[in-house]
Length: 582
Image 1 (cartoon, rainbow, N blue to C red):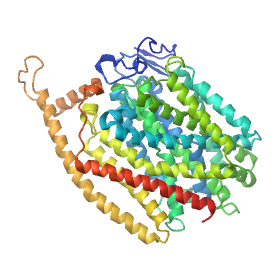
Image 2: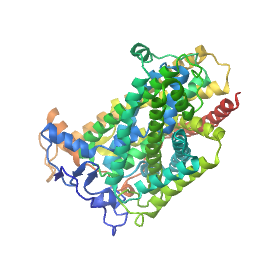
Image 3: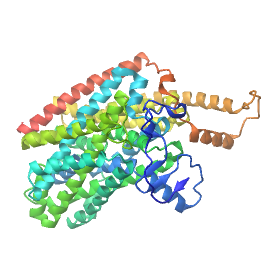
Image 4: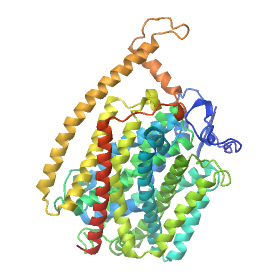
């Protein structure tokens, strides 16, 4: 049954253990089954009614909406606001093309985790542990915990800078934000949490009058869509580009959205609505990023602050000096709002993963007494981040803020590789596995991220490399990727044809006695496959045979892991060099 009006959240049955897998599915936490209870309404667990009218579909979308919108807007966190402002202040609108290229990356990556969450009913970390083993699971989770912990520190730095603009001292601003963040999460109600996040998201509307107050020029803005490397391609510019990638497409997003889709109890029937939710979120995050970049680009153009980015607090003060007090105030509010949304989402991504790792209850439907590890882990993470912010000086905070986005960008290829492998795991996704086209697009994205990371590493290790040499490296890497991608695509197409033939063979037999029946036509086969998709759920993970890595695949993953360790070290070296003026 579909409910147009809000009703009390029934919540999970406290008597059920999280390890009970309802209905023979992979679901581990009993709180992850039941009615879809959203900020704007409820959809009954057994609702199978058709959405015939546009009004009915819109009401359904409003209930489903949440995971995609929150994960995207959470991406414009304090570090994101600082990074976009830095790009605008130092390079004008000349790096806006990076945002346009990231749109397909955002959708492809996040759409894959939508399918994984809705079909499997378990989080991203749990799938990695179950399908690839403890070794790779520990590496994946270790990366996430490190980057997430640093990211939450940047959120509190954002809170400190935003409230400091209004004269509120650190020792008041940071603890107040920490208490607020925990109070919102610890209420034991998914609906109340989502409503609070929607309220914070609504504040993003002020970005648009803020950008208009900067008097942007349409022609200059449009020119920013043309790929270019202002000042030449060097390690400094590459670091900014990698930071834009890292803040816009961060690894924590994969873990958060999959777990949030599971926690909201979205099943395969509602995937198309969740895809629409994701597109709405992408539109909001891109508009916000452009607005922030344009504000700093046009206000600081021709002033003594052009090309002199320091931090977000410096941007707010500079906007007040060159654009008026109203502009500085709006930027400070945007920064505060972004920091609260980001800290909430990144913190939940981490504690969702903690529950997945240790197979403990991890849902916003549970109360604190019913899921102590989930909430204590969240409180500990928030507390540690707040403490680091209070005891660190501006120099250390600057290092963390600059470095965390670049680290996220460097580590993203590793997270995306596991994502693609899971989305080709037929025992997990069944009829929802990636198509050949999806694998080609995902492969291009992964390889582009690897090339970008390689370029940053090379430019850091060999600072004398010229723009022409780096561009030649990109071209050579693209050619290599094209050859390898073609071979992989041909193999994937062959495997897809075999799977389709097997599916067609199954449909040619009757359910009783397996009596042969005439093969369905193409339209009939498509309808049967679609019907199969709507009801297919991942079986209990313990009942599935773990996939075996070929020697070539294992060697590739180990090589990628070794390289990423080196890349992380070199990013830290480059950040230190920039901080010390070397």
